[in-house]
Length: 388
Image (cartoon, rainbow, N blue to C red; front, top):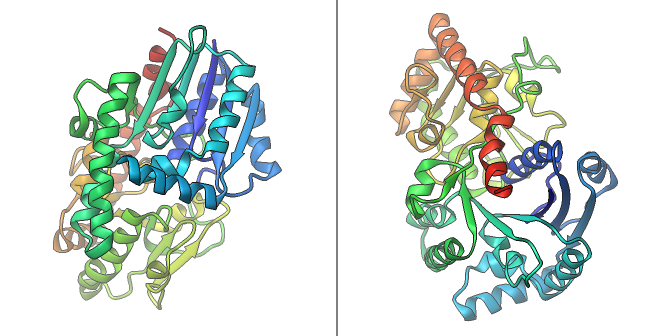
């Protein structure tokens, strides 16, 4: 089959969850189908990025979004009561170029990622794509509501608007397209009929490592894109509220916050016992440098790829119910769960104080990921939808 992917970001490097998901789905489907890629981008896509996708794509079109046009789209979306992110990613120039690209290669099925690309799926004439799939990825309306509940002032008002607009868009998308989502909890926040297409982890790439490549070591690590609001909140919560309780028992404990584009609030956390790395050439060095992984997520939605990666690398993990539930992981067997600063600190201290417990949780998490989260298995339900 000829498949057309429409993505809101170029899916390489793999420094964001949506890019990682799209990349592995594309690579897996390209083993059996002809894949064409139309990727939107707000920054230049360099040759080395294109080279990573060319072996898997029959053609690639990168549409550079220009800031003035994107913000004009936001205004148009607001006046129509549509999600602001839909307006930001749907400029008139991009839509025109997309239509030209699509008409040059009639496709059998089309796959678009996230609500912000839903307009690219619309308006097909007879003889065009017969199957259209929109991957919600996460329940973005739920994400916006959770962020709204922790915000104030103008930010709270904007998130309330976006939450309601996203809810309308999610409902409309279900009427028009096949829809997929990563986790059952996010599905149930929208509609129980949405198909589950989980994430996976590349266990050939993320595998147990004896030590960090650069020789540095840390007690615990938290990774993620450090410009993403839920990760910023988690990093600040970890250092500001959880770690003081840990340091009361283990004053020598150190923290590594690793990930691209750290916001000023994250950079400000750096100190004698806290390192902020920024983007790393290989994120595995961050995992390998630590004794355990902590993901104290309080807002956001969907599945946390960082937990899958850490478990694949045989790190014992501590996280919240919000992050553990989408995985289907069992507290006390595959990872440890706490939902406030005191509980998280207690779990961290208990792991650091017991080699046996660290080994048991690391073994359980590693086996869990290996059995349930291969990309081949994760992509199978999507392929079923696209080809039938």
